Image 1 (cartoon, rainbow, N blue to C red):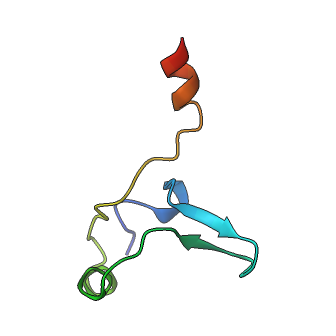
Image 2 (image 1 turned 120 degrees about the vertical axis):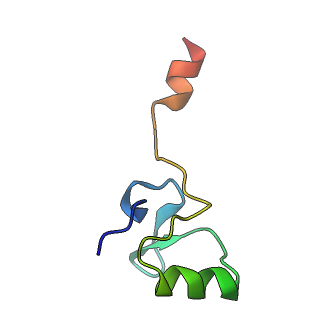
Length: 60
C-alpha cells in the first residue's frame, strides 16, 4: 500500500547525521502519528514538495 504523499519527496524529510538515517523534522502529536500509522492512504498535512529550484524561479 503506497502512501499518496511520499516522505521521500518531502522537504521535511532530512538526513540526520547523528542517527545516520532520514527522519521527519515535523513533530507529530500522538493522535496524528496513530492516524498516520493506521491509515495507509492518509495524506500528511505537513507535506511540502522538496523543490530546490523554487527560490531560483522566484528570483527570475
